[in-house]
Length: 72
Image 1 (cartoon, rainbow, N blue to C red):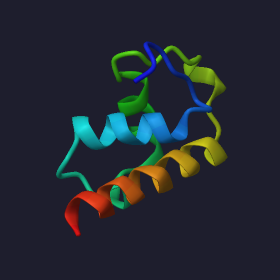
Image 2: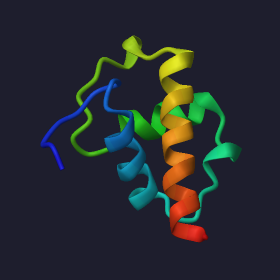
Image 3: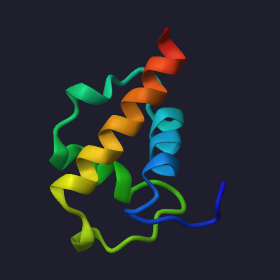
């Protein structure tokens, strides 16, 4: 795990979210809540204002893949 990561590290964020919220289906999380969850991750150092809908969607899809791997 890198010591710090930002918005462009969708895979790392997905892994961190999957570990922090193992029972949460990523597709049920609103982007506003997802943004908060990401910015609260240990090691996250991205500018909270630098996110975009595209970045959040990419992170959500990467997290969904992690979730699928863990639950199926």
